Image (cartoon, rainbow, N blue to C red; front, side):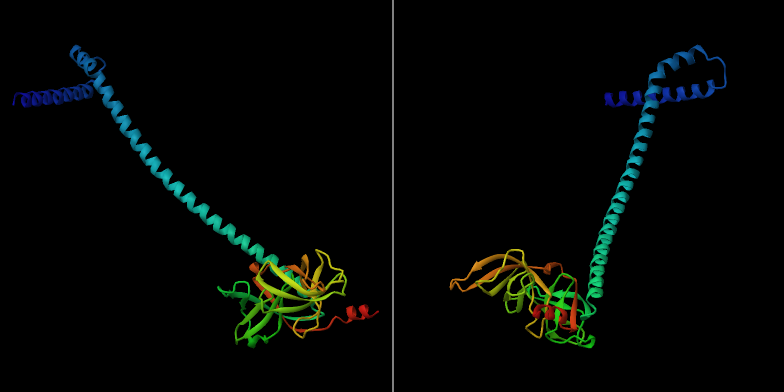
Length: 286
């Protein structure tokens, strides 16, 4: 009980002194001189006043720092959003640039080949998840002039052939499919005939039935022979990679690196009509 009374008295005295200090400060501001009591009281309460001023400044500074920190964090969040948007825009620009390059290559290829081929340009719209390197679907079908067994190429080389056709789209079997076989020759020698088969792997084909006496070397270009009605002569298939002698010793086989990057196909050209390589064939006869 006594302690409570002491605390109460101390509190009353403290408040009273603060009020006196405030009143002295307020009344002395208009006078040139202050009384002795005011001077003593001012000196006694100077540390307290400084402490209160410092506390006030600290609170004001803390509030400023807190407010500025909140503004800074908001600016950081805004900058992060801007950076994310710029990344998206940059990626879109890269995609657009890549598409422009691809389309330019296709246009140049069409211009260079228009004397021999009639094309139906198409875009790849789907791939079979179970046959990623065997089939794909294009956005052109019967109403666009697509028919079964038409050859499909791009600016790099042979892609495959049309197998199933609906009104608005078509399914293309890639030459990497194990069921696909393409008559082929070596572009350099023009004398080595063989058959290129799919291996089920987008990175490799296989050329078989090569006579053992053939002049074939790694890096030779393999093109379509034109001996079937599906694939016109002279379309690039790929490049000889590794040559192997068959167990019977009469034939050779070779792995072939495809000219086409099948995992990056986005646009293709369907050949709906073509003219034979008359000049080339006449040159061979000579």
